[in-house]
Length: 178
Image 1: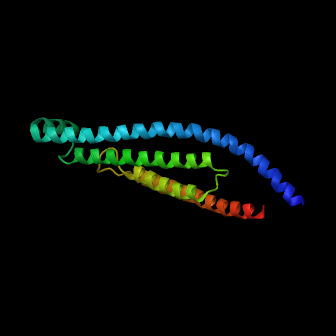
Image 2: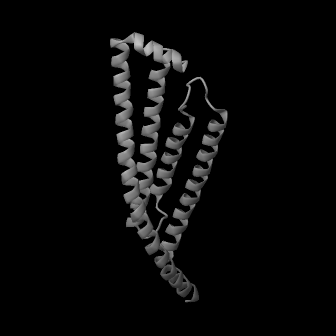
Image 3: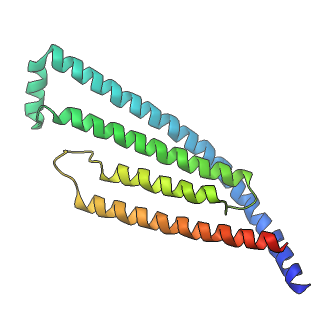
């Protein structure tokens, strides 16, 4: 009887926390929708810049060659940099999309311990890793510290995912007791 009362008190206390968490989640979902739109806009601009650069390179190679010499770029490097920029825009878009999905699920559920959140965190870690390791400057300069940082972030997020999976199993166990 005492364990049942304690569990009931904990559920009442947790409900207050979840109400506040749901309000914050709602605001974050709105903010992440804006970020998604901005990322799509950035990707479109990247593709547009790549198309314009390609057209200019075909039409007026002398202008492109002169400007590239000023910047010390090889003939393929601008194209590669645009591709890297596009990959980074897509990676950040995916991070925003996956994060928004987490907060939408939290907003709709009674507990943050649902299996989908753990899987979504794994997707976020993969997209962040891609974003971190894809160069944004010279393609010849892959920054070792960025790769190490990417690996650390992936490992931390993987650990967080494992903790949430464990929380899911505890949640099932507690739900089974009631």
